[in-house]
Structures are given as C-alpha cells and as structure tokens.
Length: 342
Ligand code: TLP
Image (cartoon, rainbow, N blue to C red; front, side, top):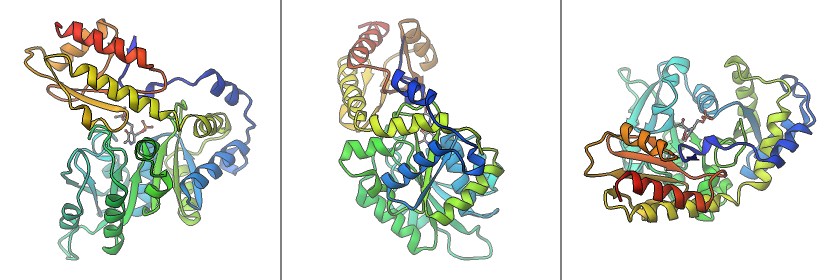
C-alpha cells in the first residue's frame, strides 16, 4: 500500500527509535526532562527566538497561541481555508471564545490589501481585531509558499495596526528547503510561531512553539491548563531532536517526488494537475470527465494499493513524505492511471 494521505503518517525510523529508547528523561512539568530541554533549546536556536515549548500536537500549538493573544469576544483574521478554521474542530471559538474573520486568499495566501480591509475600525459595535494567523506552507492551498517579502508585509501590517501575529508553520521547513530562505527568516516577523515535528520531519508526536521568553512562560501555563503538560516526554523529544538534526534537508526529496508525481499524473487524460504549482510536498489534482464520485474513486484507488484523500467534489490531495520513495510515486501514478482507465 502506498500511503499518500498525509505526511503525518510517517513512522519513526530505526535510528529514531533507538534515540527514543536511549533518551534521558525526567518530569517535564517540573522542567526536569533534559531531552525536552535540549529540544526546546535547539528549536529556539534554529528559529532564532528566545525560547521554545514542546506541545503534543499542531492543533494544540495553534490554539494555545490563539488563547495567548486574544480575549473572549475578540476577532482573529485567517485565510478562509486555514487549518485553524477548517481542521481544528471549532476550537478557536470553543476554547478561546473568539470569532474568526475568514478572508479569501489566492491558493491560501493572503494579500495585505484584503487583510487591511478586514481589520475592524475601533467602534463599540465591532469585535476588536486582535490577531492575524498565517500558515506556511499553506495546506489547502496545495503546499503553497508565502514569499518572505509577503510575510514581512503582512506581519508588519498586523504590528502597525496593533494586532498580534501567529504563524502556523506546521511545514515551515518545507518552505525553507523549497526557497532557500532560512526558517528563522520566515519566523522573524511573527510574535509566535508553531511548527510540527510529526509531519515531513518524521517524528511520531510533537509540535513546537517559539517566541519570547515571556510569552513561552505564559504558554507553558496555558499548556498545563489545556491538559498538555507531559511528564517523561523526553522519549518524544528525542525523536524531535533526531528529526531536526537529520530530516530537514531530506524534505527536498519529498518535493522532487511530489513534482515527479504531478508530471506523471499529467499524462493521464482524465486528470487535471498543474505541476508548476507543486512547490513543496503536496499535490492537488482533479479527476475530470468522470461520473464516479471522489469517494468512490478513492476507494477504487485504495483497492489498487494507493491511499489518497478526497478533498473536494473532483479534487484529491496527495502528500509525499519520508516513507514514500521515488519508485513508490511512479508506481502510485501508474496504479491511478489504471483505475482511471488509462
Ligand atoms: N494537518 C493534517 C490534517 O489535520 C488536515 C494533514 O493531514 O495535513 N497546521 C497545519 C497547517 C496542518 O496541516 C496540520 C495537520 C496541523 C496544523 C495540526 O497538526 P496536528 O495533526 O499535529 O494537530
């Protein structure tokens, strides 16, 4: 089975498992886990921020930051297909009691004009706009990458208008590897930045938040409140350290495989895909001229040995990662061609 549903499906490599088994541990709620402390120091160093915090998931990372930057009744701005809106179970409203202003972007990427127009003027009728959330790379946008200039412009606009800024950098290292811009440069203009260890980096669990020492101290308290204070978490942190040391540069292979996959899909007459839009490890493609539903086609592809996510009426998402090789994507494209009658 070739699993292209997500880069979250990766399993720890033998070397990573050894590092996890050998990790020194302590009680991280007391701040006594040396491996967690080492991971947090490394994340802060790489992203050039003062401090970092390990949290169990990317969702928790985003939601802790939303909670930190807002008060009940505030409004936050995010692109309409952002992960914080679509895939976090309504937690911004449930856990932070904020409403979300959904702004339309181009392949998930917002423009300064649209964001500026969405910031509400001070008025007793309006919810105060207090936070701008961006996503790098943009998942639903197809792994699209904000250029550094756009990130600076948007975060600068937020700061100038008195808003805090949070970057959901779940795949920030994919953006860094794809553009050659250091992840720290993308992170620099934001008040808080989160990134995932358990996607392309291949760790089984974990996300990091980086920010100032003061904000990380406040987030540590909120993490406890949200139930995310872990004990001997060094076993997980060891996987994160291993991933940051060994699995960043290899993201390039995932990008090459994604591009190759898109080029092969393009040969199938009933597939629409634009390989030029494949900037990182996510491929969005559409099956056209088919009277079968995407759910039905996804089941047929599964029977043929390819797992994919159906993400719209005609649309599929395929994600390349550590556990799929270039030969695997060739085979997956051939199997999809067979299912589609080529
Ligand atoms: N994304 C998952 C699903 O939740 C959709 C995926 O398969 O892509 N931010 C972004 C941009 C993400 O793509 C994800 C996960 C998260 C946050 C949440 O991370 P986890 O799953 O660790 O809570």
